Length: 329
Image (cartoon, rainbow, N blue to C red):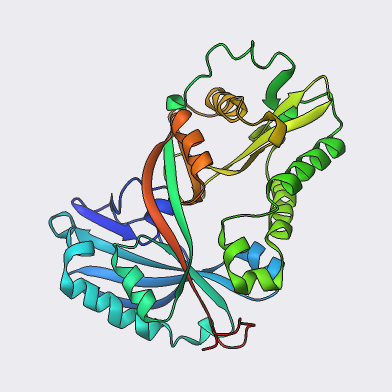
């Protein structure tokens, strides 16, 4: 690491970084290099990475575009968002990136903050905003305990799927998938809202396929459940996974749901308390939800999570892929 040097990633909030600028030069490439430019000693890199799960699910290439700037002098850090010269470079070079043949016949998206340079560049390059997101986070140690919860949950056990001996693993998975079907008939994310993806496959199908992937790739100890002993049924769950690419331990809450008849009783907060006891206290926990999902945002705040940033997802569908009326290029 060179003393006084910093780096920037356009998806910094979604990647789990606490601010746009980080000390050091980063950990190396986070995707295929499309374009590189230098300015005032800093190196601008436009990188693309294919999301294998979404590509396989939708049946056409789904790729994420990220801008990285490395070698920023600490005294020049403000230029990332404030310098008109740097913004012009990002605008001009992003337009040229759109000509790269590796983007053709694909769905390309980017997770950005509206006030940062790449957002305006992508809008000018005919990207469309398909999702507005709010990010919340905290250290696991800061998740709030639920207090005297036993009086409210006498019939419920809160434990990991690994410790749930009352159900065999197959039945437990089916109950969680059933809870997904009842909880995610409609949704806020681009998989529900983006007409291109929705017309390809329903959003609920995406959620169910994602859950199957979680069952395969995650330890049962990462799946937290609320289990009703009287009904012999899982009535709530929360799945946490380690975020890749970060030097410090950080996790995302990948998916959570509570059965409708149990909502309003603090089940989600109790699952958060279980996460507090289960994961490293100093590790970062990141939650993402749509800006219109006010109920889950309230649940985040009540459980000790703090608002970090507002981001949006922009996408462009390049020629060769199905597009809705009015969205042809």
